[in-house]
Image (cartoon, rainbow, N blue to C red; front, side, top):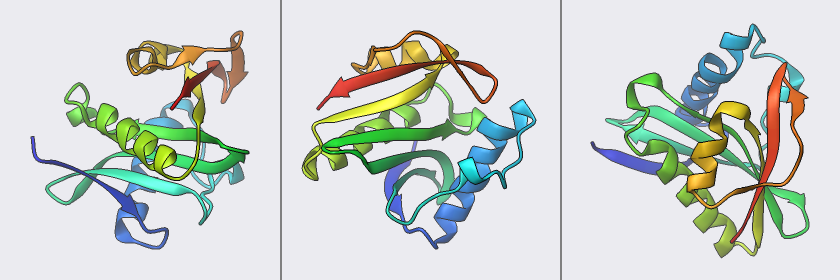
Length: 145
């Protein structure tokens, strides 16, 4: 595995590749369009991409100003061909390191029901009852940095 994690500039080709990957992995299976305003990115968000041979195979977004000293992890996705190879773990670690180095003390996220175990292995705790988002069960999860 030749993995690199980078921060993708908002107007870069990496960001465009990441947006396409997120649409394929997170939106398309649910029949949701990629042009939905809820899917929009902000320039102030930090986009971490996992690369394999200069191709984006993973993405996670940090919303650094979610709440004072709390960041939000959102839009985590990996390409099917690399799942189980550690790309998701490396993306989350890069996000957490960046957040801690920039004054954030915790991370919050909305986990799809099937991803709760992944985040629990990384130290996140469920802090809500189940709720519906994009038509499926989700849980709020949090981790202190």
